Image (cartoon, rainbow over all chains, first blue to last red; front, side, top):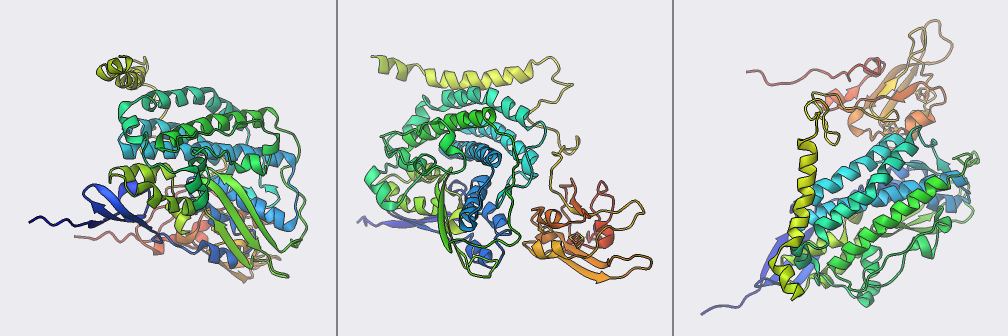
Length: 366
Length: 167
Ligand code: SF4
Ligand code: SF4
């Protein structure tokens, strides 16, 4: 009399919990997900191809618009990939400022992750509190480079301008209160029974699977693999910084939450060290009139808040444009893990799985 | 036993509520609640928003002391613009040795406010002003010509005719 049939539904592309225009095709058996496929491409703009038709200098503005929650980290990767291609050494002060802004950006990105992830799961208060702190970071972005979100913060060879007057005060004011703010979030969430019910043991991804799928960033570190490019292949001024790479072994959503919270503490530590040890000097390297590539292809990876962001650039003789430009976007690769996390779980947990991967569709679709 | 107690008595929820309650009390009972706007939010349209000194707003053509447009048509800004927003037509003006722009078209709807043009200009003749309320009703309103661009940078962005439906 009753037929036992699987039902196919679409989650997204206009669903608020998919963080953009992600469409997930789900096949359900009752409430259990039996099959899950993310469909992407709704936000494709062809950033890689556009950059191939623009000069090395102009390309940076497109990297802002990939992962718009962590534009500074994208800018840093782009600038450093170009510096590697042209063999430019960046002055030490510029390196320190870059490191500091990058860590601020990590804070901003993790805060927006915390806010939206908690909102998806149902903790509304954290959303407002996290955005309150993020606002201060965006103000600092605005003070430094004139824009809040699409920063275009760096230049090939250093920075456009030095830190603005009064920036140090802003940083100290932020750092003084940030620890209390973190405690506030933790008091609201860490012990909260609803939060724990929704996250502990949800969307597990073992270390083998994570490595096999190429997952990087906090998702990998929550599975117990202490891989952080800042430590493994130091860039900018990270070699001189003293910080830890937080890891957990539970590999579930709650562990990823703990890893990101610990990472925010480490970021605050790095910012303090940058402020304390800020060297004097110029912020821009002396560039030759015409940039000539020393090698003709580079791959440069940096640790963006979401994972490894890699820029692959091929230079061409006598041309001011990259011959080939490719981005290894962390969100794109991390999204591959979604079927692994969601299949066999309940449909309500896919919201947690998408949130915990911390995806931004601007970067996935490029 | 301990676990049972913790399940029965919602400590965690009390902890969360105490935080929100603390914040509420801080604002509600602050002595000058009515006088000083609470620092996190600002009453934006009534109180004008402040921007940082380096804020990147709309492109503005600067004028020299004689009130003449400083641009000398070197076309550096046109070349560097990543979205090809600027179009300049070179021309001459009576009593001026340097070339003078006859046309300086700026299509704001495509501008991404990156400030590359200002950076490339070797004559300090353009700047991005501090305006951020740049919305307009029509697409044509975004093509700001030379007169609009050369306006005082603190005056509001000029817009074309509004096409509000008349009844
Ligand atoms: S700000 Fe950028 S996009 Fe706008 S006109 Fe200048 S160079 Fe072009
Ligand atoms: S770079 Fe400056 S001087 Fe040259 S055309 Fe542009 S505005 Fe004029």
